[in-house]
Image 1 (cartoon, helix red, strand yellow):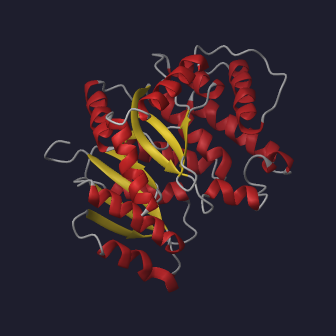
Image 2 (image 1 turned 45 degrees about the horizontal axis):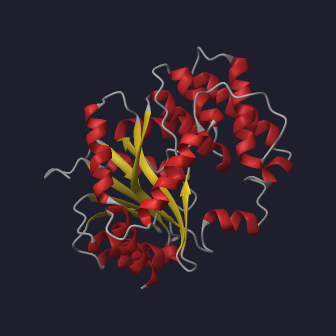
Length: 324
């Protein structure tokens, strides 16, 4: 990273995840991170001191703690963190995950050299530390020059950019647009990444970038256990499903006024299939090549087996900290 930081990490957390948050801060301290970090704490008032105390334990990190009301929308909290940042780039960092700074350097360099690039990311992993299981999360480049073609590619072969390196102003504007139109937890994720793709091409590199920890407190585990009607797969059974799909489609057309509605509908069906496994859909029209992504995933897993590879060394460090 340059002497003057260009990237701010944004870390949302809450009192009952303080142990995970502390683990991430130990990791960032251990690797000597010199980037500013803006933390969003939305704990209720009676637990207001928990995250503050965990933060004070790491004076070597450049930490700024923001207190947010428990009911404030997730994207609004993140946008306010980005507004508090003093850097042109931001990167969301979950309180239970691990970033690889060397790859972040490469992503930053790529975005600086390509002003049109809207987001950049490397290989993302899901890791179950207790079982030693590693899974590559598919991420696909969205390079098309035409914004609508990038939207179609995102709909037909969805690849979230939430945990990508982003330009600060783009993230703030995208989050504001999204939360005003699709505040529900399932479709704001889709809309956010689709609008980001409309704003600029998305670059993906075959370098280990971000490690996502899988554990019982993970939000995706909890919504399944609770049979949440706000999230797939149970959302499809909810009376609100059609209304939310309609709001999402309307937001897409608003974000891309020259969109071909028929192609948007085809892409939307593929996106829903991604969510709950529907069948009997029209053929894809995007140029994304899932086989190429699978090959990249296999190549990364092969690299992780080589003990001297930088990606393997980074993952070993993360495992050591998580298990400790």
